[in-house]
Image 1 (tube, rainbow, N blue to C red):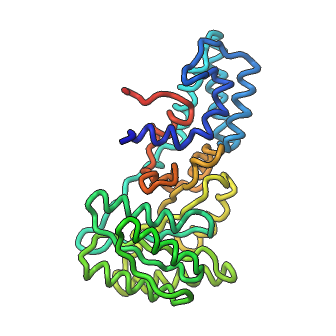
Image 2 (cartoon, helix red, strand yellow):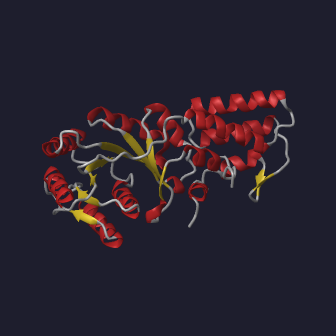
Image 3 (cartoon, one colour):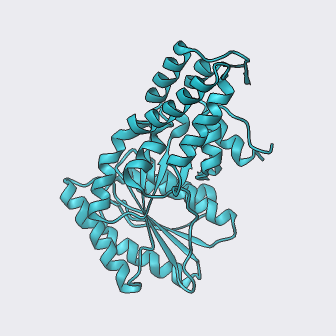
Length: 312
């Protein structure tokens, strides 16, 4: 099995090459080439291109330039170490593990716009719990989009997951209600709800989400215990505004960032966290069921700057 670090390194391989030229990494090895004004400029452009944002890019470059002033022999690997260290500081507090509720189902609502990978992420998250020996039920609450029902049914059959679903156009809150009952009666520990990503208007969507919350409260006034926004990482900082809307209307407790394997904008994790200060629970690093990985600051920062696993 690939180590967690290798999953990060492989999943971010479309982002890391943008740094390699400036940092002098060729064929997986840092060269002994010293930094100069030109490579510092290239590195700054690479940071912007990877969507780290102005503030994070400025912090990273300021520390690297300060080190360069003090040591003209600074090499690419040294700059990468500095970059990873600053990035870890920016992301302090973003890493969070899932807390389950004792004695009753833990309800996780996944929210997000269509195309973010929400339905696929629902199945992958359930698979993670299942692999850890945690009983889980899926609720197919995205009844507005016909393809969502079929998609989640296919995943459930493929991975052997318990699923509560209804027909296209059914009341999504009613599905949530039934799914909670099924989860409780089957003595499962976790209920994951795949909610709608789009109705006719934003107002309709938010009202449907609020209705799901009200229905869940009839079972457990503290539910949902987790409300996570699923964000398409390839959209980078453009995802921040949609996150603000969901947070204001529904109240988010965390985010999942998907599709980082398919984009060179892997720095979006820093920009999104910096703006929202919501913990990043998982990131999507590939198409396979086990490519949804718990977010780990050290793995992320080292992998994105092309450094090896610490203590490897």
